[in-house]
Length: 245
Image 1: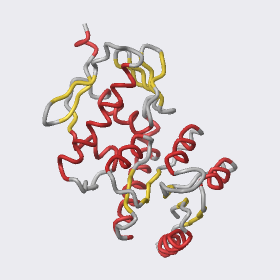
Image 2: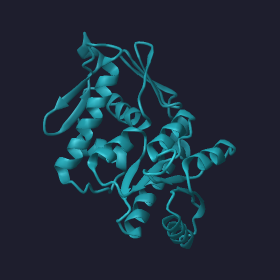
Image 3: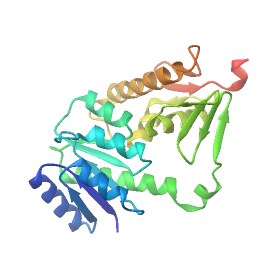
Image 4: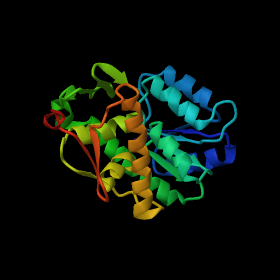
């Protein structure tokens, strides 16, 4: 049974969504604010499979809840459900470590499909023999990635990457000098099968924003950082150690 937590200050929306999910045989808990949900999660060893999070809430908004979750190493997939449709909010949510961003006006059928994609992707990452065989770390030149804790280090100093940013760096660095397409990077963020409402240029712009932010974080530690190279019109690649010499 898939376990979901809903965090939303709208009582009617929370009740309706809980009812729809329970009809799909989800185990659902709901909370009217972020702090009560955080208190619950802090007291539990077994976390839910997915968190559905509102953005606009009093006292603590959704992005603050998400940041607190990640600082507490609670790596549960988070989907934002919000009336805020601007792309700038979507980018902020994904950069903070959310896996998806859906307007509340979308149908429950769309939400159900997105949840299925996220749960399927999360299960692929965490389960099975393949996960057991994965190395604990990856090193490419001055970059070291701890694959268990999702922490990145540049020349021995930790880079303050969100989980989403870490996964993008991991994808590129695991294939140095190979081109990674915008679409592949976007699928990593959203899950395969997701279709951007802004079309091809929308998801490319989304990924450019992510890459810009990632580069800035590395350049705070190393002004000469240039290991993420752009292949115009296609995507990005991580420079191999041989090319640094």
